[in-house]
Each structure stands twice: as structure tokens, then as C-alpha cells.
Image 1: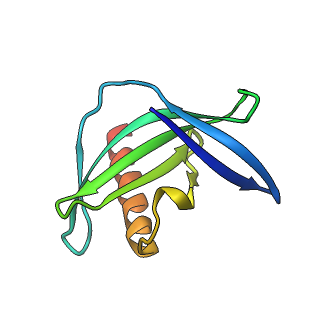
Image 2: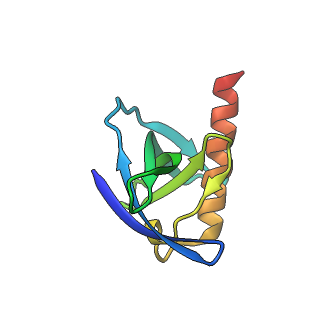
Image 3: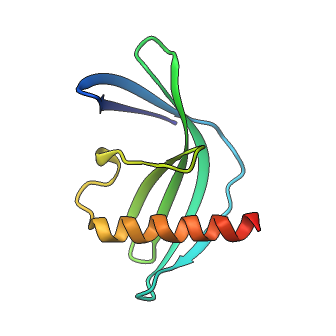
Length: 112
């Protein structure tokens, strides 16, 4: 799968190509505080510049719910969330924040 994005970093525009590696994926369930249920899978992706040099390796979270809504979130290996506006057009930011919080909580439980 090949995804192309324009990313603006510090007032400079980079043309980025995101390539996902094929990995075994498992669906993980999240239940938000308002009892909405989501499922997500994660896989690593590389962001490269126009010359093909890797500028970042991110973990991509593909999230869906029972209503057919789909979201994509990205996280660095340091644990920082990396937002790409084109990945989630017309979405309530409170939903994304709740999903990020729930994923962080889920991953912290798995580590312990």
C-alpha cells in the first residue's frame, strides 16, 4: 500500500510517501467512556521525502467502529502522536483525543 501526503514542517513543505509493511494484524477492542466501541490494528509505516530518504518511522493505527467510521492515527516510537489532517477529514477532535488516550492506556497495560 502506498500513500502520498504533503506535510508542512516548520514552514517548509515536504512531499512524503508512506509505505506500510505487511505484518500480521490483530483487532484490538477499545470502549470509550461514553460506551462507544472501536476496533484497531497497528502496523509500522515509513515516511520518506521526495528523494527516497526515510524521515520518520511511525506506527499507524487503523481504527473503525460499528457504524463504519474509519480513522487513522500515527504515533512515533517515542510515544508522540503525529497528526495528518488528510487522514481524518471532518472528524470531531474529542473523538481522536479519546482514542489516543485509550490506545495509550491499552498499550501501558500490555507493557506491565
